[in-house]
Image (tube, rainbow, N blue to C red):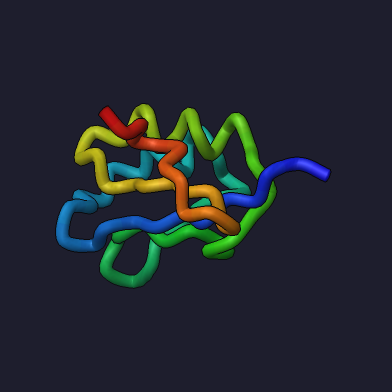
Length: 77
C-alpha cells in the first residue's frame, strides 16, 4: 500500500489562480470565494497533486505524510 498524504491549502495565501485545478482537477476545487480546497484532506500519494503544489503561484499548498506528519511539499530545508 502506498503513502497517504494530508493536503492543506492556506486560505490566507490562496489567490484563486486555479492552477491546482489545472494540474490536479480531481484533487482540488474552488469554493464560492474562488479559493482552493482539497477535495479530501487525506488522499493517496498522487503525482498530479504534488505537481499542483509545486506550481501554485502563491505557495499555498502543503502536503505532509498523514501518519508521520513528515513534510512532502514544501520539502524541509
